[in-house]
Length: 96
Image (cartoon, rainbow, N blue to C red; front, side, top):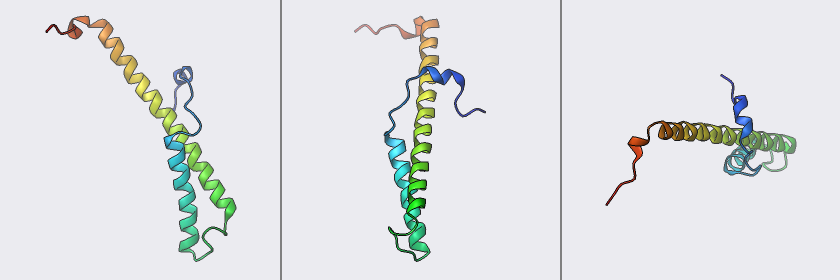
């Protein structure tokens, strides 16, 4: 299965700094810091390149996960509205 099908290109892209990219970027950076701590290296001073790499990787993965979630939600909404359009008798406004 493709991660994002071509029909997802019609959706607007999510913002670069969204909840998923910030959280996973932070998690990537913290994993680099924990690796330094477990291997008894200076926590902030060692492996700066690894900290930047893992934080960037977390941001990219978080961005694409949010993009996939928005596509799935848009697909469910489209199917729901299509069902409502084909079955209007099930969705009459309530009186009372």
